Amino acid sequence: MKIVPIILSGGSGTRLWPLSRAQYPKQYLPLIGDKTLLQQTILRLDGLENFTSPIVICNAEHRFLVAGQCQQIGLNNPNILLEPVGRNTAPAIAAAAMQAVKDFDNSCLLVLSADHIIGDISQFHQAIYVAAEQAKKGKLVTFGIVPNSANTAYGYIKSGKNDDNGAYEVAEFVEKPDAQTAKKYLQQENYLWNSGMFMFQAEIVLAELKNYAPEIVKAVANAMAKATPDLDFIRMGEAEFAKSPNNSIDYALLEKSKNVVVVPLDARWSDIGSWAALYEIGAKDQNGNVISGDVIAQNTTNTYISAKHHLVATLGVEDLIIVDTADATFIANRQRAGEVKNIVAELKKNHRTQAQTHRKVYRPWGWYDSIESGEHFQVKRLHINPQSKLSLQLHHRRAEHWVVVKGVASVTNGAEKFELKQGQSTYIPLGVKHSLANNTGVELEIIETQSGAYLGEDDIERFEDIYGRVEK
Image: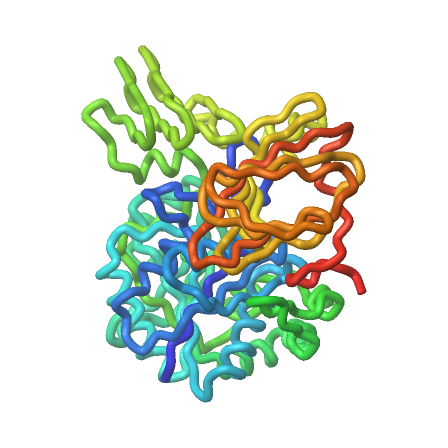
């Protein structure tokens, strides 16, 4: 039986993104080490036997970001299902199960969230093997985290007493408790945190969903029937998928089924929900600080500092969260860092660009980073992937100047076609058709300087595009 990892990557993660929009949620950020949470989720499956390439389910807006991060870790042909609208975990898992049934004769799904941290990979693998044996018996398996605190941020699972080779019957699913109730749960050994990770046979979970949540199965089946390939992605029918009830797999199925078991997992797990949570799980220095990036910290204690873009220097501070990004710098008392949502609300109210746009934007051909901007000018760094091409286009209100800083560019500039190498440049006047391609096997980087009365991304008229972005 093939085991198919299902990576759920649709959450917004706004609590972790200090001052920018949820276009790039926490699962796409390198919060621990140099790999993003999505990449770590995939990589921690290395070494497990009989596993297939994962199916990643993500919001359609994040598709190029997901594909790029997969390529960075050597997963060049990921199976990416696009959610046209958000409909919680039950419809997403149903879609993945239908795709797995289509691709494999007999498959078992390992459903993982892309925004979890797991410290003990060996224990994680062992729990997966225990769960796989239960799934082979036709069980719906959920992973329960052995609690180490009276946490009120998680739902709980009450397990039965009968041990079946490391798995237990689920006696009850419990909603997030108050502090007093959570303390009682902690004192008992049969209450576990609900991790949101699952394992079951694809055909069995579909059969049970059809029994307990037929509306979801019907809507998703119709959406998958209307699915169309979009480059390396599978785009489900939007109107059909939108008709699905917006339910979690717990509510739609697991809380109702009598066929559920739980496998305890004690592997230093964390569902990161705040910057303060990152501080709690981070490696602390002798002063109680968690530091990453270019930091000088003097007389600084019990502080989380992330400086991935600029030098951050602190002197005589304590109990802070300091996060420096390309877009903004966030500084908060460690106990109040979760109130960042109030700042985001103010940014939106005042129509600040930090609430709407991000410096680095992913495109099917690569990405661009807005380095600098001012009145009537903007400077961008363009990164064009090997064998990729920008559309043949023109701009009505701006001109552009391209300088090659890495690689070889194949350029169309009006009636001319030519190559530019490192250090060479070209000027594209306002209103002239132009295109840029990387026909080599290495990355191409361009510094683009835009000038004109209007520099918005909507000032573009496309004529030819290999990614299907020209309306027929």
